[in-house]
Image (cartoon, rainbow, N blue to C red; front, side):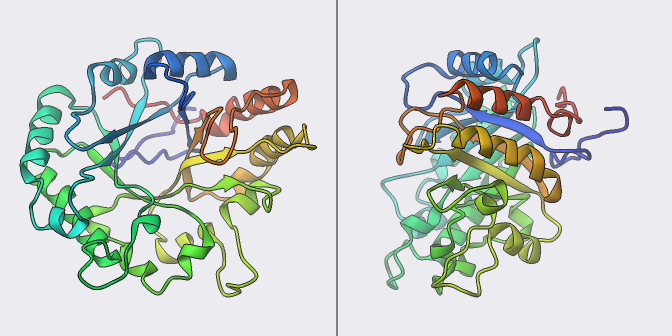
Length: 312
């Protein structure tokens, strides 16, 4: 759309980015999975979500080709867990600095384009609150800060950082929840990973889940609005599970997203998690003809294509 621009932190001035984590747990290579998913939904994705762990270097050659595809440039959302062998406290004290430095050299040498980077997403489930565990909420915040600042120190200036919460109200009730946040100087976007379980009927219910036993919780979107009023929000993973006995549920849900998403202007990216074998069910968007059509209509909504992906 004329006049729509992208900020230095990859915030679209109009609408929101449309992203995909395609055909997860199918064994297909990322490029093949993405092209198949794009054919299924009838458009090119703005964001491709990929996962890395440990000493893996990214973006890989394949991921770089996805980002630079002449048929449609894409933004990469790289989800990295720096180590499974060290605690967050150990990483914050420098235990994997050589690994971080090696990654920084790789990025500065091979990929000057801007990309999204989230460090150890969904940390809530990994917190061990006991003092000295090395895995407290404060340890997570220190780890995130150390990784980001170390990458910047070593020349990585094109990583747009994302703090990704699980987006479930039970974790927000924990006394340590607020201690997870690493700080505004190292977090560019905030994100959540909500899924439509049996208690969710519409898009609003997805992003603002509440619980009867945590009456003061306003819902994640409302909390993010209050806690991070100046930061864009990303749905870094979102998905809709199959419902036995409700074959048209995905169809109605995708329609609700299209009808309701404009009410939440702070959400600047929606990245769908498409998998036949997600941990809690099948989130493929095209398991029924009606679901596929409703998802395709959503994907082609002008709100989700109003700002072009930057070329560099």
